[in-house]
Length: 430
Image (cartoon, rainbow, N blue to C red; front, side, top):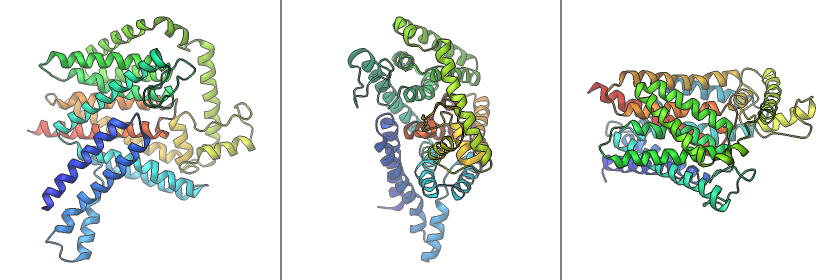
């Protein structure tokens, strides 16, 4: 086998593994880990093959140096922001009160975010591959929506793992909690709706997309996740703002779909929606107290924080040794606000640099959509950016970035966004 054929085979294998990652994401954490690790190994081999076979590097030392240079991750236009954030994370780990715990979290969680990011950005640079990845995503979304409906209306358990309904009425599908399913839908809904804007001569394509949208929105309502509802609505508003006039039409269609799905379960929604003032006040008050306690921890180590992956043990120590606003004996695992927890663990430096990555992605997406008047991928860019925005908004009230499945989903969207931007830029230059 020639080096060119080997590289092509490796590249195709990586893409197949990424498709498997998208397909299995709601169902299996083990599948996510296996797909990421195997994809990374194949990517390393793919990048080092030219250096190993290069006749221009006759010595082993020269080949090894060329191979190392080839392993620079292709973060694209977000590269500087990513490296700065990772640098802040390293300083956080070095100053951690639990070094082993922090190093483990940095390698197995934080680095995995960006491995997924650059693998998708590097491997989905053609319209065909991006379309295949979206098709796999639609299949998984449909399966997840049907699973949640089956769970609520038929068996009380989901099909794949037998997960029970939360509180006896809230859908989870294959996720471990209804809020996780809600977070998944918050990011997914704008992406699915963006496909309605793609040009197709086949009427059944639009019919299928509309059906999937209705089922997904119905599933979203059945999570009874108030934060996910608001985040999805905000994401659709962002989508409409980015997409322009046609995007606003899609937004109106989304509202109609919400009304239709809402009426289908009207009595149950009124009974279980948890939107009464006392329940909302309790949820907000509990989180506010937790965040105020967390801010006291930030004040102790404001620059680089207490160390990655240390929030739970550090918070438990804090409430044991100091007065807490929370009820005695209740020790939350997470901050229920990813930005608060990120600040506690990596300091203000980590928070600012993370937001810098997000800002850079959104600014580039907005500029590309505005300029790419003829590029079909501009709809996907708008959908991915709006989905990421909705996910980020929901992360302000939940633990999305500390869930393997949900964090992988976000960085899949980020990588897909970079791929779509590159594709749009290429189409505009032709």
